Image 1 (tube, one colour):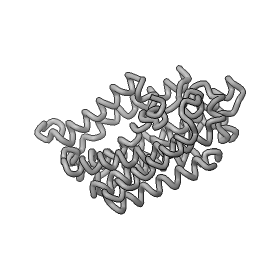
Image 2: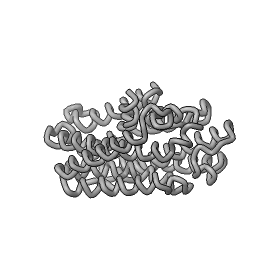
Image 3: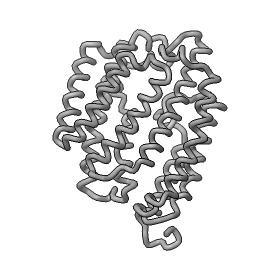
Length: 294
C-alpha cells in the first residue's frame, strides 16, 4: 500500500486533461483515438509519478513538519529512499518508452513536461509567482499532448481556458499554504515567503473575473460555433460559474483550499457541477437530433 501511495495515483486525475481536445472535437467515441489518448494517459501518469517521487525524496525532511504531507511514504519512512529512486527510474523509462511508441511529437511534449517539472522540483518551486505559472503550464502541456496523439487541432481558446483555470487553482493552493504558515508559524515551502493573504486574494479576484469572460468569448466565438455545430454552448457557462463560486466558498468560508484534486475527490457540489457540465456538452455536441439545442 505504501508503494502505491508513493505514486500518488489520486493525482493522476490531472492527466484526464489529455482527453479534453478529443472531447471538444466531438470525436470521443472514436475507438482508435480514444485508445491513443488512454495510452498517452498511462505514459503521462508514469512520468508524473516519477516527478512526484523525486519531489518527495528531496522534500522528505520538510514534509515531516507538515500536518498532512508527513504521512507520505518517504516522510513517514514506510518506503526507503533507495527503493523510491529505483521505482522513479523505472516509471520514467516506462513513460518515455510508451510515448516513443505512440508518436515522436508526443514524446517531445512529454519531455518538455518532464524537464519543466524537474527544474521545478530542483529549485524553481521556491520562486514565488513562477511556481504558479509552472503548475499552470503543466496543464497546458497535458491538453497539447492530447491534441498531438489524436491529431486534433487545438483551439487557442481551450489553451487560454485551461491555463487560467490552472492558475486559479494554484493560487488557491498557495493561499492554503499561507494560512497554514500563519497557524503553525512554519514555512512549508520556500516560495511562501513571496506571498501573503492580501496579494493572493487580489490575484484570485483578478483571475476569477477573467475566467467567465474568457469562457463566454470561447463559447460564442465564430470559430467555436462553426466547429461545434451549435451556437448554444454559452448555456454551459452556468456550470463554470457555479464551480468557481463553490471553489471560492471553500477557500474563504471553510478555509480548505488545498490540493485541487483532493477537493475534486471529496466535494459533492463540485463533482455534480462537473458532471452536469460534461453532460451538457454531450447533449450539445453528440446528440445532434435534439433540435432545441441546435
